[in-house]
Length: 156
Image (tube, rainbow, N blue to C red; front, side, top):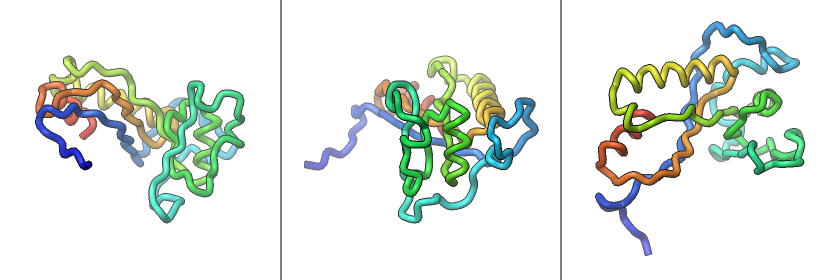
């Protein structure tokens, strides 16, 4: 049966935020083809919609990046912290996103702290030639709580 959320239902979220903002970066492009360090823009390569692939940690242990993804369908690779994955994703028209920087919801309730965190996160994305960040926040918060409101403000 379908369970509708109530005010006591915990909030759990995985979200990717993309950026196409261009800035001057100080680190050299790690790709052989320097054009691959430009952010991906436009519609997804898969006309049927977004399809996330995941690469990193132990998920793909022992599988070379070139063999671990079906680039016909993947539009975004999450946890693409390795440069090789970013270059390969961009070569196939897919976005490469990294995990969000660590954050503390209690501290980020303050708008000025949240703004500073957001600016640092954006700088990290741009300096690493990635397309955005993914929030894989697995700490349920009560809907309507101060922490849930702060999390909503962080990802907004």
